[in-house]
Length: 400
Image 1 (tube, helix red, strand yellow):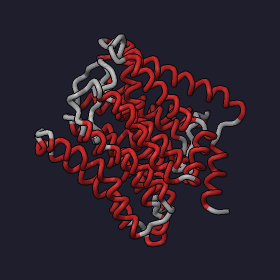
Image 2: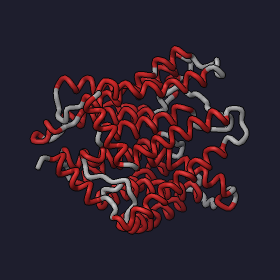
Image 3: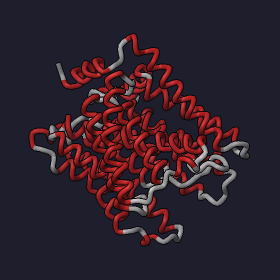
């Protein structure tokens, strides 16, 4: 039995039984409805509410189906094998709503937005072109695909006359690590596993994540009162689509469905992580139980924001792709794989906050326990929930 068939067998063993299917479906549907209600309420009666509702509901439904319905994801994967060109170029359609929204935003350069169609097309194209092994010709192409989202926002800032060199040393270090990470994985892979380095596929997923973390896309507002721009949502849909066409659940035994074991490990890891995060927060920050001052709907909205734009992309890439890749493809010890992903997350977290030490420590702790839960369950539903709750509780207690 080849490795792919074995992975499919392992995935089947991770899927919930018949007794859990109703609970699984109801839980995911309830979460989907909560996300829609919260996000639609954030714009209230704004001028762009109708357009926002169409974009959000349509995109959220498609992403929901791609991530939670194995049949839909499997169909996308099969189509990618039969029509690789069409599959790779299809994400360019995500540019159409952006061009429509530009009509009311003359301050945004249309030519610049058209250039960024490359950030939509290249990741999925790299995944489709991947052959599952490391080839010299792929190293340069994959590196360009992965690093373009890191360099694009810098070029945009420079052309706009912004303070291009005002990035902190830590922010520059984060970008340097992001630039070098794909090459380091390819160059330092153990000799026996070097031909198993699925380099283009890895670079395609890293490109999407870098685009989200470094805000590579130009800001295009969807509606008044909404902090997240159009491309913030489009990047999440691109991630779900690319994960599906890349057969993300097939290359490694990964599941998205909540299970009783996953729920149990969620509770254990949540308790252990909180036992570290809360004392650390009390020791390094002022006690600020601001949950008493925050309206419940605002707190819920913040949780949804963390789920969609922080926990979901980071767990899909750091655990579902990178950690599984280092542990399964390269056969690295779990301790090293966890250390690499946790250090990367801590660095990303610290570079986006003025409180460097607290953010780095929080990022590393969350990452370690999410990695621990993932290696025990191979279930992203568990790690996404754990990540969301931990950063949400830290925000409620300490404003971070």
